[in-house]
Structure formats: structure tokens, C-alpha cells
Image (cartoon, rainbow, N blue to C red; front, side, top):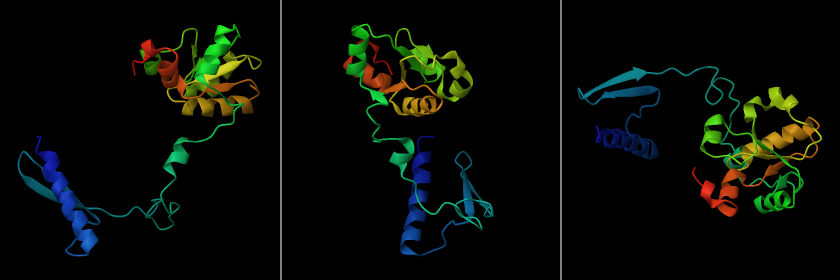
Length: 184
């Protein structure tokens, strides 16, 4: 079956050429099914969904989203919302009492986590924030720092004024502080 991606890729390339040059009959509104074991093609006609947000009667999507902004990539967080890994390591070494909160999923926690941290996955945080002290110095972390920033914004809005996100997440911690934990 290793040739299957080549066959389908060639068909896709042919469709792209037809659309670009405006020739032939493109597969718009049709779906081609290919059974490689029987070398059979089947065609299915597709109808537009009138409620589709992109191509329906009243579309609500009119262009591509800003993917980086949507995912928080490159978003500049204010200094009060984040702490660097070297800053946190220095605070911990100096004996500052910080509560580490991991907002990743349990499968990520099982791979690697910071010693002494508490696991509360981001999706369960609203229901479980009663387990946290709103006066505590919370440092929230995830893999790269995006989910933890979301968690910190949520926690601060709920009265956790000292919550901060670990910039770069556990990935940055593993790179800069503890390379032995760099396992994922």
C-alpha cells in the first residue's frame, strides 16, 4: 500500500492544475473514492450544507484566521503574568514558597513533571480551583507556556492575584534548568 499516497497525490495534483488553469471538469461537489485493492474508483455527489459557516447561505467565516494569534504563539505576556525558568529556579533556591500547578493532561504528567507540583488539567481547573489557595504564590506551567497563560488569566480573574505562568513551560525548564528531564 506504499504506492497509495502517490496515486492519491497525483490525482490531487491533477485537480489543482485543472483549477489553476481553468480547464476540464474539476471535482467540485464530488468525492472520488478509490479502492486500491480492487483498482476501482467510485464517485459520490456532495451537496452543500446550507448552515456551513464557510460556504453556506449566510457564511460567518470570511477569511483565514491569524493562526499565531489564535494559538498564542509569539503573544507578549506582561511581566507580571509570567516568570522565567531562571527566575523561578532562583526564587525556589532562595526558599521562596511557591505552589507549582501543572495544567497539562495526566499522560503528559506521567512522562515528566516538576517535583512537588499539583496536577489540575486546564479543562478541569474551573471545577477544581476550590482546591487552591487564592492568596498563594502560584506558578502555573504546561508544556510550552500557552495553556498556563490561559490558566493564569482565568485564575487572576477569579481572584488569584499572585498566579504567574512559567514562560516556555516545562520544555524551557528542561532545556535551561534540568536537562535530565528532557524526555518529551
